[in-house]
Image (tube, rainbow, N blue to C red):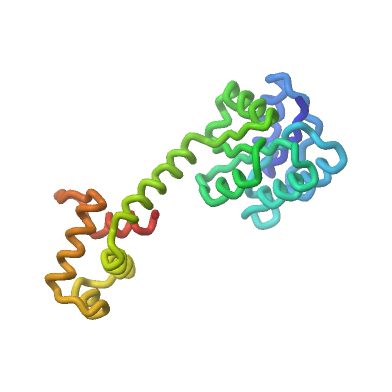
Length: 213
């Protein structure tokens, strides 16, 4: 199996090249930036391209942009994106491009057997998503489901809570009595399963749940 490996960190890249070769893969190209990646692929397309998501010059989404470009030119090319961060937005965008893609956190690449298995699965047209990213996606879905249980008025109250407004300010904004605002907030806590606790501030936890959703 033929790989092209691109990462701006020479130390990490060289280590990954050595790991890949120890696993029996043929490394046909390596570089330190996204532009060089595209040039390498166009000149000699491998089975899988392994690349960092953040590379020069802006260290934002160069890897993702390059992945889209090479997948457009070579739809069957496998792409394994490596990142230091759990970024669910980029993961969903990557998954939407079809099979033969993967997203792993760099901290987990140290497991050589799992890295090799991920590369092989991607080359075969499968998808590989880091367990920490899956957990984050599942957590967000859980938050969305909890928020969806709120009534429209309760969501309005929670939105104003997220803006830092007091109960009095919420009542004035929505033309509700103080007791009605308190009742809505109690219902919000109940539906979000935020039980009273000495060391927890339920108002803050409710807002965090809203923001995560």
